[in-house]
View 1 (spheres, rainbow, N blue to C red):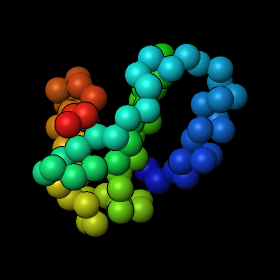
View 2 (view 1 turned 60 degrees about the horizontal axis):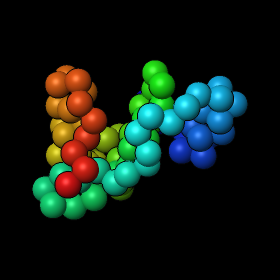
View 3 (view 1 turned 90 degrees about the vertical axis):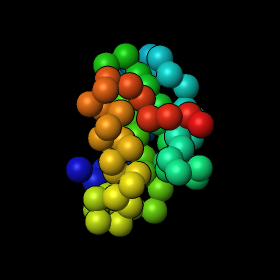
View 4 (view 1 turned 135 degrees about the vertical axis):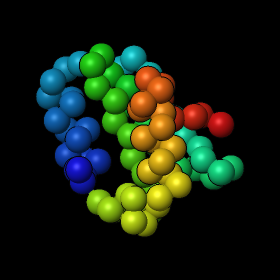
Length: 78
């Protein structure tokens, strides 16, 4: 699902939920794949250079996020 990051941040601020994992860049294949911030029951992950078609425009980054999700982990920070 494609959601503007500014809209996401606005909505999360309105929910008044605590940050559990501070904002950080995540990496895949030695490059910044996007950014992550974790809240109480929500994780926001962006994919750099993908728009709303992650599998089409950034398949390696999409796979990295999907794999992390299936493993119950956040995307890699290095």
